[in-house]
Length: 254
Image (cartoon, rainbow, N blue to C red):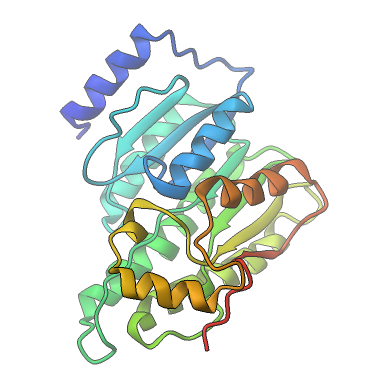
């Protein structure tokens, strides 16, 4: 069921003359209403793409042209398929898919429950696998698929074991999908950020931030724009394929 918020957003889009034409490039960005996802969505819009995105919780208050935000909990399989059906009704091709949505449930290894594990895997891995599979025949040659990985998927962090495993799975999915698109010119890559100055990171206590700064050679978090530049690089460069591109400021977890 399409939410009242989405209906209102659609009305705003009509008032701002959003135009989805057959000639436009189409992008799907999951988790595209905040943080890195929103930064990537804005970059794609500036490049001339029409962007469909998923979100949970509060809708984006900023009004963007050529941007359609659909409330969809990616841990809920039914909502994932409803989002897929909605996009398929609107477009005949998808030129870029950015699998950005993820979920962290901060619990220790022994405190993490089955439902916590499944929910994190569904959001970061399973829902994106399903989307790419279901959109496969709409992806033309020379398209771009980009995942948002994480430094936690490369280096172990005891407090976020389950999250790290989901991101390691994202990295593996990236590399394995390359073979599925072999010979098409479509590339599949993952951006692997370290710590980024997003609203979620701003909530960390100052002492934890300072500890992270000490472990980062540049002694700060990345800006969203600095990370978005890596996504832009993957879109613009047709030879980068199957890569895990780290954007971490020289972070060392030890």
